[in-house]
Image (cartoon, rainbow, N blue to C red; front, side, top):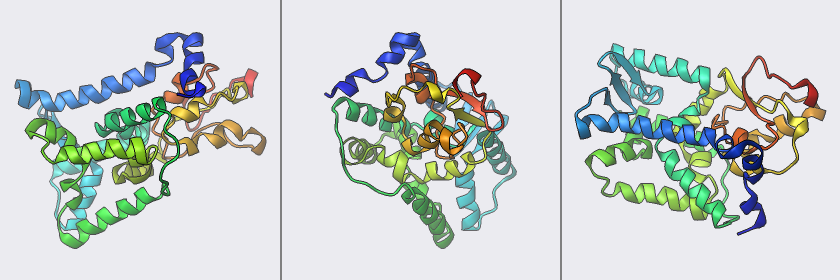
Length: 292
């Protein structure tokens, strides 16, 4: 294992303590596992606070929540959604337009638990290199699943979507689904760094389009304090979104990370010992006057 891997977040731990260097990571895991448990505890324990799945659910028998991507595919098949589905999709759209579309990927999606585990193991084993695909590939796959819905009259993507398959498999048995989930883990571990979430997943591509307009943003408000440790780049699943806001002061670039591909996962905030990053909003980057 390289010296750089051994030092990852060590400076942050020394400066802020273990909790300060892992708080967003821990909160994300609590969020992901809690949401997954809410869906599972009805069938498992008979506590029906939440009925349904990530595609459509009813909270406390009153509040409908619907995946807008599934709704869009349904519309393309020629089906007319029910009122609750339209209402639920609108609620979700407004929520992610506020907090950031790819917050779904980092705070909700159960597959992120698998890909983050592969990424952490890849760093620990110091596996470098591998295959490369344009990050735009995910947008082509998004276009493909929408085209399939329109041409086949069915929501084909949901038959193979790992986002739907993992919770469903935990309820009814994974069967061959383990091959898909295991394949994603192996792919991210040995073949391509952040391969599934960062390059292929059409669900992430859809939510990144919403993320372009979201209010909540990560900002490099103390970018002049950066000591070039590269810990933020190491842990970021979308490294391309950090470079300009962090190093673009001489080019007049905003310190705000405005890319819709940012997942607002907060790991850059966690691992930075200089507190370069913080959460802000797109209209107020909160620059620290002592570090501009």
